[in-house]
Each structure stands twice: as structure tokens, then as C-alpha cells.
Image (cartoon, rainbow, N blue to C red; front, side, top):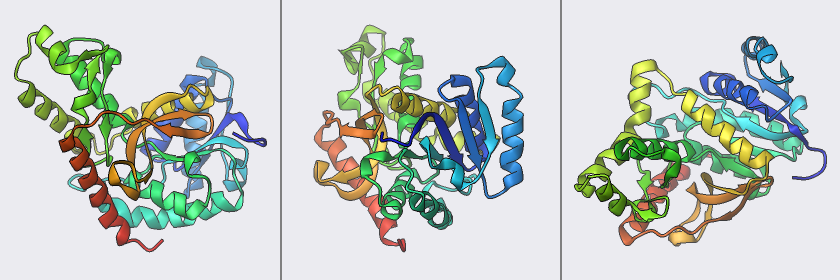
Length: 317
């Protein structure tokens, strides 16, 4: 991260459910001493800033306020959650045209201010919007990243932890590809503290591996739809994912996260953004991590890329 960046400052563009939950999560994290909230509806941003600010006496000293694009110039991380919400029975890809047009108004504002921080795209469909952002911003690809399958991966770890009755933090497994219906659970590289997954399952008394992994992957894939049908939106899980990504960047942790990034020939995939594990640090993505995938998983990954490519071809960017 270059000069002119305040490591203690974040900006959030979009103060809907996800933006405000992310602001609340970041306020509790103590990572930042300044958070600026921006929304097309200035009153909404002001209301959220006031509400969250009233919790400062219970947390760490910080300044949370509603601002405009001039306030984002020195932010270490600019989090973009602006966009239409996913409705019940609507896929993330159905959202695409509404949200691409919103991004066409946001990205030039960031670009012309030559912001030096990391741009974190969270709005859906996140892979498409990260691609659009890379093209519209003209910044280095490494510092324009999408939240990708960080949350899906957490959901997978949670489900496996419940299934195996083990701490989900000891589970090492990734969801890769599109953050959406064509996502892939990379079972062939999954393990629990270094022990191959099937072996660990048997140790815990589970033997129907194919049936169990299929059911778990389906639950992970459909969990957002289920939450949306029950409470109309998902925001706490993604807010925690945003906090984790910010933590990794600000602390330069060099953690491995499955974030959305541009593909350049990996697994024969080119010019499309999707999620693959990557080392993330203060400048954004440092390098992708080539995890072991079997033939079937590689083929599914290519199919996921094709799904996204077909959508990209319809866009005017």
C-alpha cells in the first residue's frame, strides 16, 4: 500500500443491510479509527453512522460519519456493497444488469480520485462486478478484489464442523469458482488438521462419503436462498467475512482466502474473475495458491468460468 493511505481508515459505499452490518462488524473489530459511509440516500448513511456511533462508548474510540466521494481518497480499504438486493427466487446472476449500471456511476468516482487503497467488492453478483470494477477503474488487478467465496467457504467449514463434531477452524476446505450456483466444493484438497477428509469422517463414525459430501455442498450452495426466503436478506455472515478480509489486509497477514480475482490461464481459464485461494496482504492479492483439484473439479471450474463468461459477453463495459 502506497503513500497517502491512512491504514486506520475504511470507506463503505452502500449502506443497505450488508453495508451497515459490515460497518457495525468493523466498528466492533477495532481495526479502524475512522469509517466513512456513503450512500445515494445521504439520510440513510447519516442514520446508520449515528446509530453505530452511539455504541462507541462500549467499543474503541473511533469516528464514524456519513460523507461523499472526496472523503474516500486516503482510505486503506474501500468496501463497495452498493446495489439492488437479491430477492427471493432471484439468482445472484439475475441481479447483474441492475448492479452493473450502479457500478458504472460509482467506479468513475473512485477512479478520478486516484484512490491508493484496496477496493473490496462485496455486492452481487460479486465475480461479475469485480470484473466490471477492474475494467472501469484501470487500477492494478491485485488491489481490486471481490469477497468471492470467503463466506461460502466459511459455510462449508461450519457444516463440516457440525457434521464431524469438531471445531470448524480445524477444517481446511474451499469453495471455489463462482460465488453462486456453479460454485464447487474442492473436496479433493479438503482435510481436518492435515488428516484426509474421508479418513477423518470414518474416525468419527461416518462412512457414506459421497452422500454426505453431496448433501453438505448442496446446503452450502442453497443457504443464501434459504436465509433470503426466511428473513429477506443475508448480512451478518457476509459482514463477518468483510471484517476478516479487512483484517488480513490491514495486518498484512498474508492469509490464504478464496477471493475473486482475474484468471490468466490457470486451469485453462482466461479473462474472467472467479474465486480461487490466494495469499492476501496489505496490497491486496499477492499470488494465487494452486490447490490440488481432481479432473472432475477442474472441469466443473471451467464450466463455472463459462457460466460467468456468458454473462460478461452480454454486458456493455
